Image 1: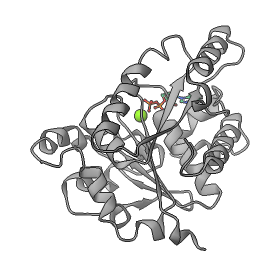
Image 2: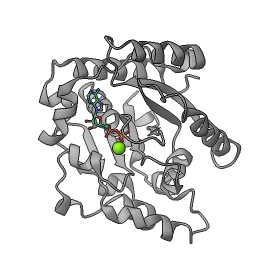
Image 3: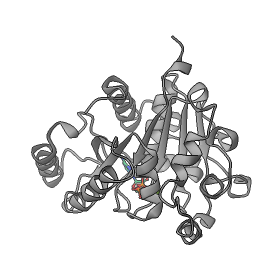
Image 4: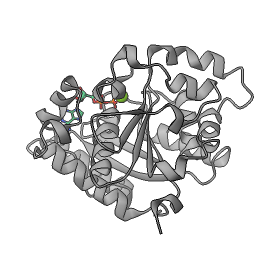
Length: 266
Ligand code: ADP
Ligand code: MG
């Protein structure tokens, strides 16, 4: 059996809090999966375009973007761009995307636009194994589109005091999407990010998260690592920028866990 027969797994990286590691996880989990030979597309769904920048896509090279994917009859594999990492592609975003909401609400299919774009792509399963959707820091129509298009949601959770607070709102939104547009939507897992093992508060947050969420929390914890935060300014995933850094090792481990869980794990 070739990978062509395996349906592409679509995973939304969501958390309405900003600065929790969504974009960093999209880029580096994507790079780690690509390193393992998986063909990965990152859809940059944040008007800030941080994933696109972090992957080295110059602003004036962003010709076809997520905006087009939502509002024009194009497909992901048609417009995706190569990155410096083999097997890793991106549909970039520009600031235009911030006005997409306004146009999207006029459409009857306003919540289904990303799913429609993915479904009309006849080459999807032949060309891609994973789509990682990097959501904006809100529960806006853009994030709803990601959840409707996705098989699962992966939640980066920053190891800090208020981390668990916003989670109930996020879970509520996931439940609403499940009750409506996407009954199959699963929670892929919660990944603790920017973890500093010397910090007692961070330790406690991790204990609390595992108590509250149980098996939903990935075993892999992403450490706070300066190399991870430096990499985007070199337009590279940390796996390329410093391949043996703690951050790189952790994201490889996360990729392994994700692959091992398979597409239908609860
Ligand atoms: P989000 O997409 O959720 O807004 P980002 O991925 O942009 O969050 O991360 C927020 C900031 O934290 C960025 O400056 C990023 O470089 C930094 N960061 C993320 N993960 C790590 C990490 N493991 N170690 C150090 N810095 C990190
Ligand atoms: Mg981001």
